[in-house]
Every structure is written in C-alpha cells, then in structure tokens.
Image (cartoon, rainbow, N blue to C red; front, top):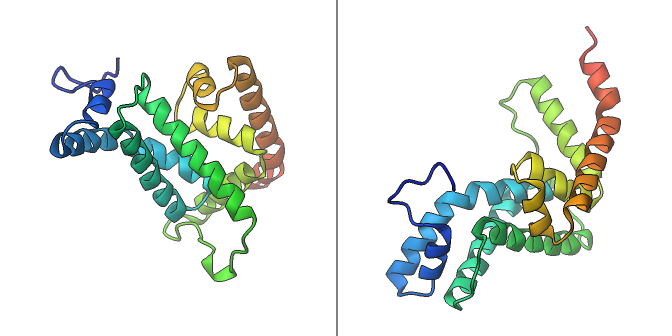
Length: 190
C-alpha cells in the first residue's frame, strides 16, 4: 500500500475503472492518476530518450493511450506498471524512428547553464554514458535507479525474468563505471 495515500484517496484500480464511466468522472479519475504518476513517467522517458521536450510529448501520449485503454473497459492490476509499459513502448518506437532521422545541430538541447560548471559537466557525462549503454541495460538501470522500481516490478514492465533484470542492471552499472572511471579520476584531481 502506498503510504502517501490516505483513507479518502481511491485505489489506482478503482480510478482506472472510472475511466470508462461518464466524462466528468473519467476526467477526475485521470487527473488524480496523472498527478500520482506523471513525474515518474516523465523521468523514465527523459532518461531513456535524453530530450526533455520529446519526453514531455511521450508523457502526454502515454496518458492518452492509458485513457483510451480505460475507456475500453480494460482490466489493469498494476496501474504504474501499465503506465511504464505504455511509456516504454512509446520510447522504443520513438528511438527506432529517430535513428532514421537527421537532427540539425541547431536542434540539439544543452544542459542547464545556471548549474555550476562541475555539476553540468558531471550531468553531461552521466547522460552521455547512459546513451552509450545498450538499450536493454539502459532501460533496466533507469527503471531501478531513477524510478525506484523493484527487480520484480522491472521484470513485469519489460516482460523478462527477475534474474535477467538483475544481470542487466549489474552489467549496466559495470559498464557505467568503466565509461566514467577516467572522467571521475580527472574530476578528483586537485
């Protein structure tokens, strides 16, 4: 049970069921679910895709598909897992399409310039390192480290065994350490 829910807060499954009800009730239910899970879904998309604007678009697309599934009266046991599954599919579809397109230099987004130089540099290194990971390692790592999902929850979202999830996260961390080792060594030099 989510400790942030009070006795007055309806359960996720109840809210999902309300999506197939009348328009006002469905909009209220979607609004509550959006407030509960939008940040988590956005963070996942942002870490997988690497572009805040695209992540925002994918967040909106995720909730549109989620709403459509609710309108059809579909049964969902794990609402956050279902949302992450939708987001995952949209991210991978976007990545496949993006690999076929050329991005003009002017469209590249840079890191926040208000942050201290060292922090910006480290954030850029981490993001670049994440992008160097194979997709399946990056996804498992992001779900664990940025979304805080358990191994079982990750296995459910990506449709793989818990053991495979553990292996992917282990390999992702190992690869990130290898990639970042020279940079972290240089940052720690006086």
